[in-house]
Image 1: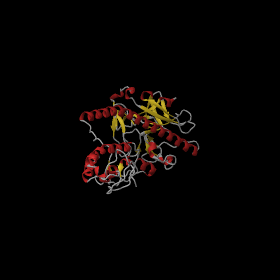
Image 2: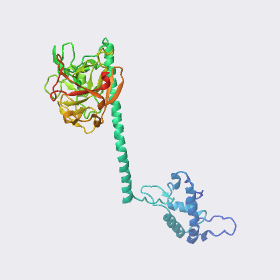
Image 3: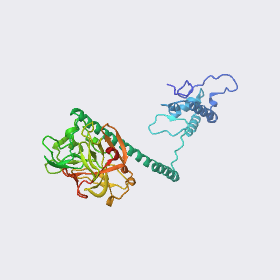
Image 4: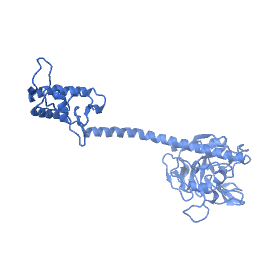
Length: 403
């Protein structure tokens, strides 16, 4: 097959017999095609070859496939003349000087212009590129961090909404009543309230009641991550296992006996807390109809003060200014905390955004300054709360929950 871009030819090898030439002043003997005549004709032939290949549209058209360089010279320069050995050798040398080096393993010669070698980056150029990349990273990292926090906040609000929907679904299946609170400790008539973050209590309050929240809600919430704040510093290792086990939960790294589990959300349905002297009690809703004198608050982020795990410190599942990690235990989850002796810190300086879910399924945001503290009741008969420094401390409710 004739290589693309080459003129037609009639002889694949140099002709060995004279050829009849047309009459005219250019007519000469075939023996006159000396090395000098070839040298004079060579530039014109090379220009024709290169110009025809420059007009080619595909890179493969610029290569003479399966065609040795000597054969190219024979085809393009002979053109009916008998070239002497010296003229042929001269043409080959000249053409080889104009072609690019033949790559190892290639079966053809590239007769196009040689590629210029690539110039490497200088040290200054490299430093400039690194500086630009560093500047862009410095600008993008804070923005990406804010976007990540916003995404986690949306996930947390979605969790609270799913919890509210699950509790309402339970009520629709159980005579418009919410499940009993698992934030208790004791048995029969000798029980008291515990912190509202309890996912699984220490023991059953009575044989008819469950000690775990999942025993009531597992049908409506199968993924335990819904019951956990995504902004908490660390997720409880056995959260899903504890949620699936229900009342039978036993921590695999402790003695073989039922264990409790404390989360980072506060669950307020059927819960009672102490608001303080002259303010009475906080009572969570017992059903979708809310009930007389009860709040419409179902669940919220944990935000409290003076917990026994972090005395004289604010704590929350949401990260806030100046907060450090309070590590979890085998029954409790880690949370953020910041020391504030005497409870004298202005809550606005914490720069924390909290969320709460209500009976109607909506979730709203509120700040730390827009809260009201409640205490956990130690004695149900007298409504006496735990003394400072010896119990779960204060829990802050959104002010709208008391309206």
